[in-house]
Length: 611
Image 1 (tube, rainbow, N blue to C red):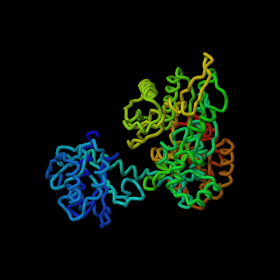
Image 2: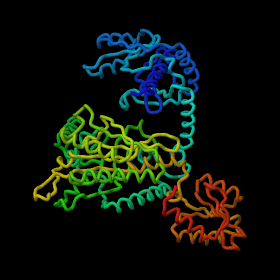
Image 3: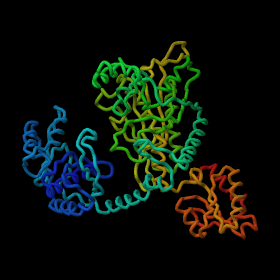
Image 4: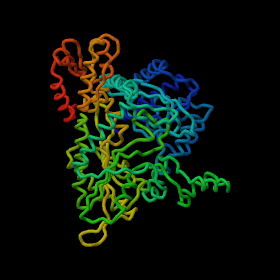
């Protein structure tokens, strides 16, 4: 936990103290720091709303002014249980009702870990810490919003109220952050996506399953075309694979069971399912037989790699064939919890710009550097210039990972070396690896300074062995290949969400769903507008003609609101001189010019994919 997270963790305790002063019967769950701030989950009969924030913040300010020290208290597990049953954990005093959420959290603490409490004023909380010295160190804070959240993120558990806030060491930092939040609201991809008709999430289709509308599909197609051009330059071969595969395929890869919590349930053969029903087999018994591999079925693919592995293994391979680079814009499915779904950034069905490179160990370094260079090309083309790298390493819980320690050590060393040579700043994060290998994740900052995780490059010495892959080496003997998994965009849905907010919907010409709008000053010039439209379409531009019976000013305002990059105003003078008056969304009025000249300008802008 860094210093800012420590401050925000302390602010969460101040929030909890204030809540209990106002509602002494509140049952507290957890209050961690999170990206951008903190929250506390609370069970309370009173429904908290933003109208309650001034009263809560007033109490918080008084607690901060008192400079209450944060005292660390280490006690036995049994002593903590006694306090919990007396209602004293997460409370200002003993109560008639036990601190049931704190008791549940207490039971989840491993036996070898110490039990610690933190106290500020009368508030005592079950907490591992750390905290700042006293409440007075919190100079700037603000409650931001309230939401519902299931306890521990499980829909089977009670639904709590989650109160969010943020905190900083100075009031100036707080003001800067609040300004960023205001900008974020204006740029919200859900709001802009609806206004510009880019995507739709329909409840009859299902939560987290977005529909790309025609305008959004244009952006997706342009992104795919851009990346496809880059892939073909680098010797990738594009493939298509099905959306489902046999369950045993994912048992072999390890996605089932290592990734099972994030998957949709297996799809069973209808006839086999009827047999189970006739035998009155319980769900638990069926799940157990699926786990053991005694029941077959299909699975909506959570990842594309097993499909690409089977393509590699479809015929004998020689060292002369390697590296083999297989790429796909493949749709995958993850069963995200409903409370975690959010627009396009967290969905249940999404398309990855996925690829798998099968190579010899001697080729790993060069292939890794090429993958990292490709990501650099992608982020620079999108104007996401502030990019850092996170090197995800294996964590302490070895049960979460496949393979032997030696292969993991080699993979981590290889990836660390490549990250150092790539020119990106990087940090190492134990516990962030994929279950089959370490990975590099790319963190970019957008136009208002927010950090996003984008693409990934993963090094895998384990799945080739699980699938018994081989190639014939120069010595005539079989050898295990190495697999590099990489996806520069990550997911097209999430990437589009980031781009919408980064550009605030003002897409550059090459991505804009509508590139040019022709605006006649009156109905008398619609025919001239039609001729211009036809010429632009023949030059492969996306263009519309505004035929509405409205004033010129009103038509221009609509085009600006719809964020069209260029407007061509046509009237009597323009028709007589076979010219157009050009207006740019970025630069305003550019002036009159020949249509051919305008086409040459935007053709160069499009081909160069300028921002």
